[in-house]
Image (tube, rainbow, N blue to C red; front, side, top):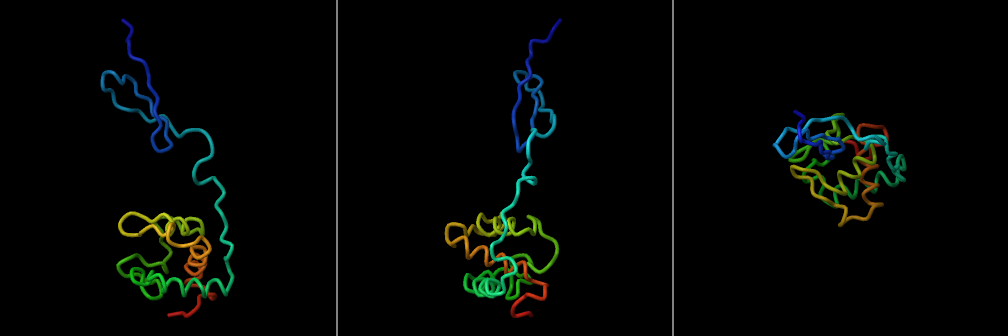
Length: 141
């Protein structure tokens, strides 16, 4: 005897899931990613201030002015917030990902600054953060 169940398809976090028999409470089965460019294949915007010594110094000033140092430490070595001087980055260390961390915030404490800071100031903060541990770092610890 043939089953009267039909397959239903849903999208969850970029994956296509098939529900074998949704009317009978069947478990979802992952079928694979949805075709097309993924989040990591989309070109990321470049920092217009990358490598600009004046912008990096301004980023350092903004880092203290907006009290980023209150959580991340005076020279971004960590405190209540994570160190920005190490090489382990949960959300990625590219300019665009650091920008999004500042603008949109992150769980467990990083507030969203995108509605409070202009984009050029966020990019200068990114330039400063990316200068850490390099010869271009202003005011080394």
